[in-house]
Length: 411
Image (cartoon, rainbow, N blue to C red; front, top):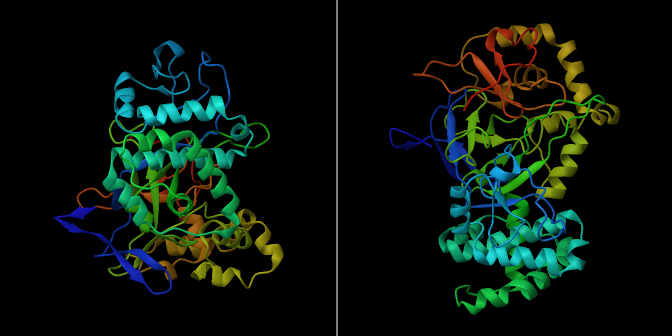
């Protein structure tokens, strides 16, 4: 993202954290600091074995991943298979030149129809197979993007050796002979398969299903519809009280709908690192540490974790309860802080209670993060938007009721 030709964020080496994004100038609340397009997208649905003439059960376009709200007769199907559907003929045409090339179509069909052992594998392995097919296809249709994928940091995990061997053997036996027959793919090896899986594990962003209201049991259903590799967004490191958050408008954007947008939560001074949270901010300390170590290979020592490391086990069992309790206990103090004018220098100025009160959506079962809308003509917006449910909250409502959640944002 640039202003007057100058990048507002840059990639830099950060001691003890590797590469990360830092502010090239003072960044304002709501400011868009990055809009990034994926170099690779793939479905998060496991394979389902079904008759060739059966209409697919996917609810999303297999290219742009928009929600399919049309009747079956209005959906465009791949002419070579019955398992991939598209929201329009134009999306099918674009897919056939990229994400759903003839090689991908052939490979997916063979995996679904010719390999019962594969269909009995856990969903996670089936989705990893989707990624590998998408990655090898990227090498064919866009070698430069494939090199970008290989340049991203990966996390080696010895415990994944069995999965790597299985997937490598599977993809090799079903697909690579056809690929190498064209003389276009340079080398296919177990090491390459392992490297690609490591890139996916550490860099994939999930494009989520639309937010749904809780059912009668209070449970809302929201899962991943697709995963994407975003070359610049991959450089953002994690913080448990982030100063930026990501938005996507998959179903509402008319163009480049799978782009993700990084927006500032509050003001940040030049030279500070810009961080996202890799999961909802209401997770407790032990849950966050377990997830970060297992999925990303590191132990978090951010300011929030340093505080919560000294809390009792009971306090850390339920971060959602902690958030509500802290907001109740410190409400008067936080209301005074929320009313103060002037930019905030950094994360150290944000106690837990203040962050939860001001920047965490309280719509039931949401727990998204709020960020101001982009400023207009350098004038800060008085509205904050939730990056999960799209709810808008006015600045003056921060210290009171957050509203009934009926507002929404049009992209």
